[in-house]
Every structure is written in C-alpha cells, then in structure tokens.
Image 1: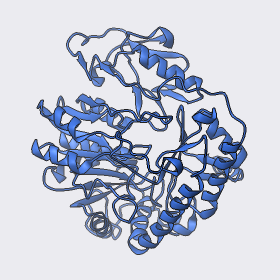
Image 2 (image 1 turned 60 degrees about the vertical axis):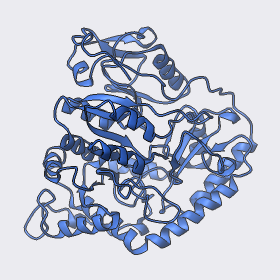
Image 3 (image 1 turned 135 degrees about the vertical axis):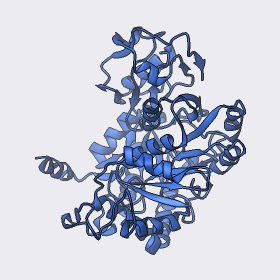
Length: 483
C-alpha cells in the first residue's frame, strides 16, 4: 500500500529542507480529523457560494493579508493562476509574461488561446546562474508598445528573487492593465519584521499564494487575493468554478484557515524565532571557503544589481567552487547528512525553510556545509547556464499544440520548432515551450543540465535524448516574433 511505502520512506529519518512548510511538525498544525471530511451540506457552507463559515474564514484571511477579497483554493496555486488569467483576458488577447514564470502560466496561455510576449530577467553572474528580478523599466518599455490585456509575473521566484511589484504596479496602473502576481512562494512575506515584500500590500490586482509552501497548511492549498477595482470579482469567481473542483475538501480548507489563524495569534513570536535561526545560520557559514550561500555568510553584504530584493527564507547553496554540481551536493546532503533539500539545479541546491523548522534542523545543515567545505574536492566544472538567455518564438503555444509532431534526436533538433515543453521540475520553469525554435544554446543547456545530473522532463515524462518537434508548421510564416 502507498501508506506503507511512505512510512518506509519516513523511517530513513531525513530532515525536510523542502515544502510543505509545516515540516511534518504536528505541533504547528490543527488536529485534523477524517470526521471533518464533509461535503456541502446545510450548516457547513459552500466554497463556490460562501455565505456562512467559509465566508467568515475568508474574510478573516483578507483582513490579515490586506486584500479586498480572499478566496480559498484547494487546487493549488495552479487553479488560481488559470482563473486569474481567464478573468483578465479573452481569447486572442496579448499578455506580457516573465519568461521565468511557472509552467501553469504557460498552460494558461495555451488553454485560453492567448498570445504571449516575454520579459527575460538578467542572469545573476556567479556560481548560482539564476534569473534576477523583472525591472520596472522592462515593463514600462513593453507596455508602451500597447495592445496588452494583462501582465503576469512571478515574485518571489523559486530561488527567492523578488521584483519591485509596487513600482511595476504603478506602470500597470498608468496603462490601466491588471497585474497578476504568482506569489506561490511568498505567503509569508509582508507581515513580520525581516520578511519584507509581499505583492498584496504592494497593490497587485490579483495575487496567488501557496499556503503549503511557506506556511503550515497542507499540500495543495492556496489563496487568491483580489485588490482594487481593475479586476471584476464575478469573472474571477466564474473562472474558479471552471478550474477548481466542485467538491472542495473541508480538511484542506480547515488547514488553510488554521495556518492563517496561527499567524494572527502567534506569528510575531514564531517569526522572531525564525529570524534568529536564519541570522545564526548566516553567522555560522560566514567562514566557508568554497561554498556559497546566496545573501548569507560571506555573500551576505553583496549588492547584486540584478536582484531588487530577496526572500531570506530560501537558502540557495552552491558548491561549484568545491567541485560539486547541484545534483552531487544534493546527494551528499541526503546520503551522508540525512538532509533532503527541495531541489537541485546545475550548480546549486535550494533548501526551503519556514517558521516550522527547528534549531536541530538548522544545526544539521550548518554542520554539513562546514564539513563539506573542509573535505575533499570534486571534479565538476560549470560549463553551461541553468537556463537559456535568448528565446525565439515562431508560433503561439496554442498553435503549436494543434500541429502534428515527430520525434527527433536532441543533438540534431536545432532549428526545428518545439512541439512540447522541456523543463527541470522543480522549479517547473520551461527551458523550451511549444512554438519556440530550438536553438544551439537551448540544446547545450539541456545537455549540460542532463550531464550534471539534473532530471529533465517533457510533456511525456523524463527526456530520453529526443524531442517532439512540429512536423507541419501551419502558422510558421504568420507568427514570427523575437522575444
């Protein structure tokens, strides 16, 4: 049984430096019970037409987060992103998107028949090789061209990079275009000292947050916040009735409310302790010679022009200067030190922390990094970027997905048009999307990631050295645009 297999996994005793944010720390959670697994009967309200207990719970959340309206989501941030995009656009509209958005945004573009123009952030020039922030200037330049129906950005990113949402919102307001922010990794921001930012208080029109990533709710739970009057609430709710299940779990909704109420009651104390753990960690890794932690330890005072702000809950750790790829570092941490990180990229790992982490967990990570830093070196050399820097869109995604495809070898695919997504998951940001031309740079990035031990996925599972490409580009000449 699946239950038995998971129990066997837990017996390994791995400490979770990954989501969900409750870290399996039951003391931080509600006493959830199967007896509360109900349906929409008299007395327990209806998520799709809330008038009683759910309405009051969501109003409490809206008051805490500072939004005009907050809706519980039990289909993850994904269903909220899809609903937000549907509410702000109509088929054929043009949308301005950050190229490092989560795959759910791209699925929204395809399903809703939207045309995309991309903003590509600058890359942080270091061992980390991550995307920086989307700038106000990038958004202003793009929107000045006209014709957009919505702007969709991710802030913070998987790596913790925050964009100037307040400044970007001012530009969107100037052009009367709604700003949608995928803040799946930022539900903890903007409430307590040391954890600044927060897209809701920055005025974004729709903000989607995962309450399971950095708060103490169960996996699959999220919130959708609406601000101001630029977005029609009725259209959002109508879209949610399409993209969210008609049988929402009361256990999941209890979990969302419990996580929010915990912040209201005990948030100040818990985040003060959390902030102290992170400060102590930074001091402890100050002396590392060949391991870098983004904005921590020896990197703490760096001024990185590519990054507007940073979410300190994310520990982005690189041992490239020690000779280890991200995948190798992840394996060492898991097998030798019983630490399971959230993900590994070509040159770094991400350890996700939350206010539910323990002193013991942080001590385990400090000790591990100090010992690895002092130990023997590996032989990995960083040769390629984690993501391409240039993208050439030949067709819209919804057009490419309508075309017949054929499989070709990856090494001979340059020049063809992709018929599928290619991505490392996590973080789920597409390296290649349907309709984009496969460049030599993209081929090198995919091969470099694969050689470094990063798992590469496509629409059809793990990549096996082949890509599906468009056989008959019906719209090839009609829709060529460089982004």
